[in-house]
Every structure is written in C-alpha cells, then in structure tokens.
Image (cartoon, rainbow, N blue to C red; front, side, top):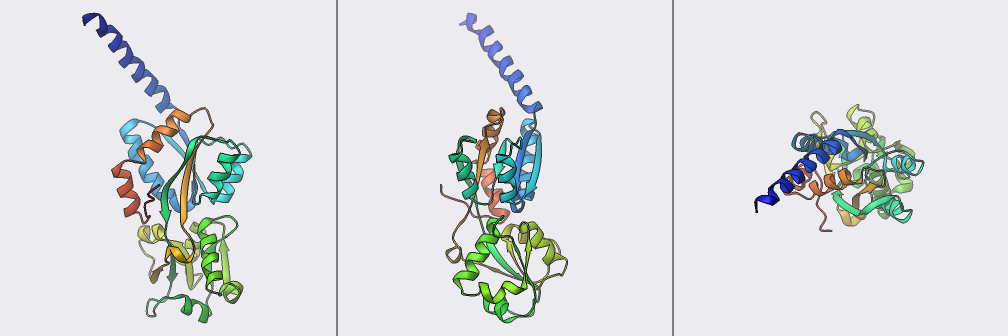
Length: 250
C-alpha cells in the first residue's frame, strides 16, 4: 500500500492545478432577459463555492441566438424558449444535449389596482399594452398566442407597445407608460415598487414556455457542463421556484 501514496498525492495535486486553470477562465454566458437576475444570483453563489468567474451578457433570445451563429464567443446560452437551442443543436453548435432548466410563467399586469384584472378588461379598456416582441422573445410569442386564441389580437394590436424583450416591457410598466403589460412571474417576484394587480395566465392558454440551456462548442466545455450539473442540485431548483419559475420534469 505505501507505494500508492505518491500516486494519490500526485493525482490530487493535478486535480487542484486543473481546477485552478478552469476557474481562471471566465464562463461567458448569454442569458435571456427574464432570467438574467436569477442567473446572476446563482452564478454568484457558484463562484463563492468554486472560484469560477462569469461574464454575463443579457438580451432577447432571438438576438442572442443571432450573435451565436455569427460567431459570438459564448460558452453557455440560457434561452427563454426551446426553439433556438433546438436550432443550435441541429446546426451542431452545442456540446452535450439541450436541458430544460425552468418553465416560464406568463402574467398580465394591470396598473389600476382598484379593478379586477382580466383579458376582458384589457380588451374593453383604452390604455396602452406592453409586451415583448413576439419575433424575438418567447414571452412575447406566448402573449400573442394567448391573444390570438382569445380572438383579441386584432382588437388590441393598435394599442400594443413592443419591447425588444420582456425586460423592456417591464420598464414600460414600471415607468407608468402603459396600463397593462404581459410580463414574467419572475419579474413580479423581483419587483419592489410595482403597484397594480397581476393575473397569472394558465399555461394551457399559450403553450409551455420551456426555457432551455445549451453548452456551446467553445473550448471551455468542461467548465460549462460542470455549471449545468450544479443547476440540477436541490438548492438551485428551490431558488428557481422562489424566483417565480416552474420546474420541468424533463
């Protein structure tokens, strides 16, 4: 047995050295706007535990996808949908497989807290309505699907104010520029001073907002995949629920 001790010690030292190299290279993460505050919190905890640093870029899922296919050097892409990660998989940009990290929850916010909030009130009102651009952002696509299913899209279209992403839609609401807004539940959970009423929209009325993540072929796949393993821990899953997301059983 004594002759094996040097080998074990050498292995331990090599592991430590390897970890130090990984931790010294930041993980470059592209994240959909709705998930950015939650990701930043999770990344901060992970950095405290492991020393791994991050460079986080935020935008609409559509714009981030376009950046990736044009050569942007990201290691991870946290999308607000499953369509764009699926495209990246088909186009052979990813390392490993797609994962659903959370299910988004769409809400309708109404500025006037003296009245019940409903789609009927929105349709019969005269105020402007904020939502994310359906072509770029999954929460906007979900809102459009909801309105089309309720035969309200043509009715409310003249009053729509489009944000590039759901964060911009929230800005319109928080600054008093609109009477209604389609937002994410996570934004409502984080909001400190947004008055008004909120109606959570049943998922069956717009389809699931299946938010997926992929590790990209970047040369830093080992660190990226290690971070994704951390997302499967009970601590992170509890954080996601507290932040206003539902969990996928995938």
